[in-house]
Picture 1 (cartoon, each protein chain N blue to C red):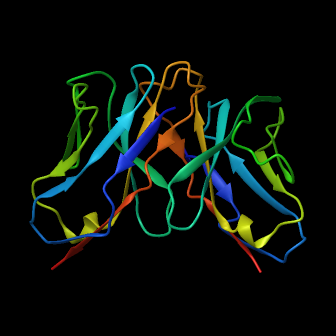
Picture 2: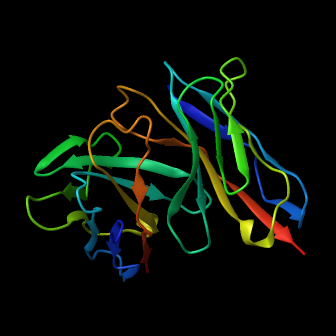
Length: 113
Length: 116
C-alpha cells in the first residue's frame, strides 16, 4: 500500500537556523508529493508541491525536491523564523488513487528566539 | 472567495448524542473530502463525495458514521451515538474536479469534536 514516513518531532530550533524535515514515501506508481502546514488551531494549508521526479517545489523560503531514486521529499529552509512554528505534514496522491491524500504523521517544529 | 467553510469550529457532545458537522466547499468546487485527525496522529481519509453521490467511503467506520453532499446546501458528516473515541478534529476539503493529482485540494479550518 501507499505510505508516508516523516521524522518524529518535535524539532526545536533557534531562529535563523537551517531546517530539514525528512519525508520518505512508498507508493505503487508515480505520486504527486505535497507539504502541508498546520498552524495552531487552524486547518491545513498547502505549502508546496511537486508532481514528477526532480521537480522542486518552493514557497515562503521552503523547498523540497522530488527524489525518485531515494523515494524522498525532504523539506528544507535556510533560515527559520518564530512564525514558522507549526506542524508540517508530508503527503502523496496517486493517479487512480481515488483522489485520496495519504499523510505522514506530521512533524512539529518549534522555533525559539 | 470565502474558501472552504466548516462549522461549527468546536462541538461538544455527550456520549450517545449525535454530531453533525457541516462543510461548504469553495465556490465552483463540486468535490468534497472528509478527513479525521486523531490526537497526535496524521490525517486519515474518510470519504469522498460529489453532489448527491458518494464516490469513495473506504475510510468511513462501518457503523454510526454517514456523509452526504446534497444538490443544495453543505456536505454533512453525521456521527450517531458518539463515543469518547470519536473525539478528534474533522477536516473537510474541496476540489473543482476529479483531477487533483497535480493540485492537491483546499482544506477548511476543521471542526474539533469533543465527546464528554
